[in-house]
Amino acid sequence: MSYFKSFFRRNKPKEEVTYLKPKDIHIEDNHIDIPSIEIKNYKAERKTLLIMDDYPGMISLLRDDLSEVQGDYESKYNILEATGNFAAFSVIHFLNKSIIPIDLALIDITLGGIVVKQGTITEYDGVDVALMLLKRYPRCEIRFVTGHTINRKNPEIYKFIKKYEDATGLYIDEIIVPKNSNRKESIATFLQEVM
Image (cartoon, rainbow, N blue to C red):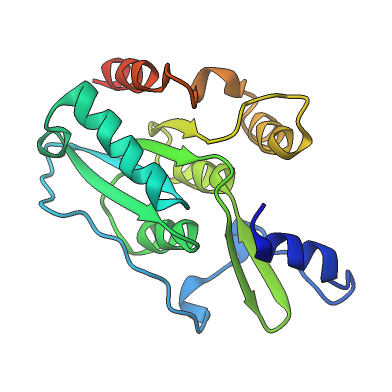
């Protein structure tokens, strides 16, 4: 858990803080600088792949995995990357402004994104972004990545699993990319299934 998340969870007076659902936020109304993301060398005939993690090192690791299993993957897909503290907000902003469909997504399930404005905390995780993607692009193929061990007995992870399963009615186990040595194999299988 990041310092900011734990600080706000410990120190927030419940009656003064309002949690907004993802559909309630309007990025353009916030007076914060949301990093924009873009697709370089976009070609309409290629599928668009979103790679999203709040930790830049994981993005690099996923890029290495993609290179290993797909070779020059950047010539096969339009690549959209979002990383850092505002990754979720960058993707939401992209979805609100772009007509480019996102076909595939590798999303950090525990992704943290928090904005505090006038006493209101707005927070998004990977499940929130995945649900927005599926609402906008129902055929989008999503796989969740995480540096955590997926364990339903771990309350920190289970809340994300339950949130996705409750919202979609689908079991999440089949769309998790494991953090261990099977990660590359799982990514390769994912890309073969969607081609």
